[in-house]
Image (cartoon, rainbow, N blue to C red; front, side, top):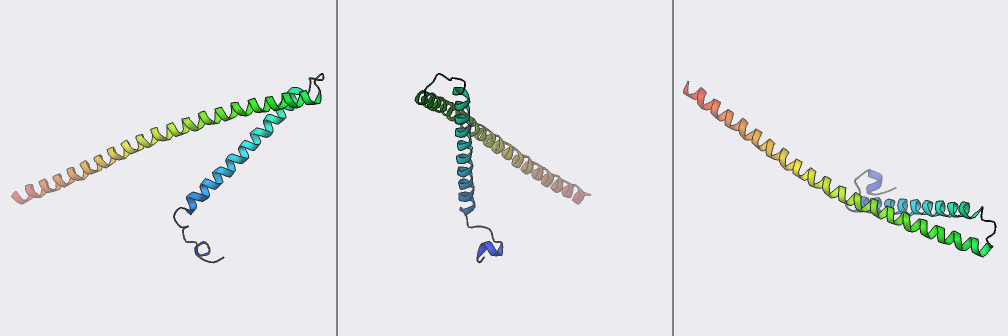
Length: 127
């Protein structure tokens, strides 16, 4: 190893972000493939007791079952993603307001301490 990675220096700006994005994409892909495999397993379990179906009919029912499961799964994931974005916006707004309030209180406290110090200095100067 040579360079920044060997020395333990921080990664160049954007590299870490790109790595997180790539990991997220791989994770999403693997989760979706697991969802597809589960839908296929359920489709086979659904058609298994239907002995009167021909092979072609069984395959068609299984394809339809999987397609419907994946449509519902995609809609569910979209709702979760939408809600997640909505909550993120709400929390960012709340955090921003909280930060403004904390800074305002800090400024008020420092100002009050400064006024008290000046006032004490004036009172002691008169004595």
